[in-house]
Length: 238
Image 1: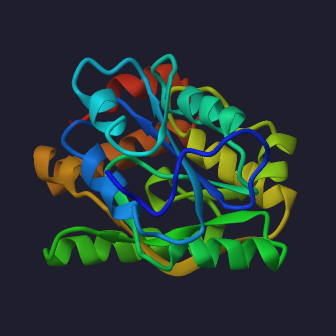
Image 2: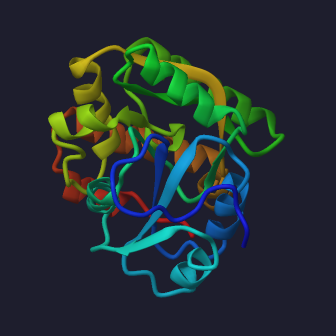
Image 3: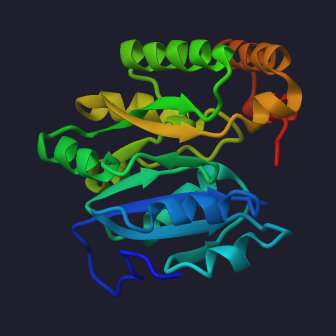
């Protein structure tokens, strides 16, 4: 696959490092990587595989990306990717999400303005009206609270990421914990540019059932329930 970016050599780069944690994502990873092919400002892409048993690694290696293998666990995988990255800023992108063509340029602009990091405005990839409510409420929550979820495309300046200790290696809500640390470290921004998220979890389990599950797990997290216990409620959808 020919892309505008290439696998870089040694040394710290000036572009944006995109880190994609993946586990059994053969159905989505190719589409996501292809969407990044002609995007300006991408310094490198690292796919961090968490012990997939399908063709995720083989598909990823058909693109000019760096493939890293790590123990399964999104936080662990993202930290390993960050440690191996070289860009001036890092974007953590879920394997079932895509970003608009101008998105990387807006990350660079935000970093140049002194923001510590931020996220994108989310759009769920479905015409169903119910998803307009879900994405609007989620975007409003993130804008008002400064607490970002992983499927909103969290990004951070490289130096800030390591200063605050990266992601806490917990089973769930590593994104919430990280974005709170990020907000405490400096100004953050929610970009108007969109990240397009897959509706697969809602479609597989049902919108109402999935939403109630999210609320239940979130309430447990707020009340201090151990993330290992909460993970048992949170089902992976592939």
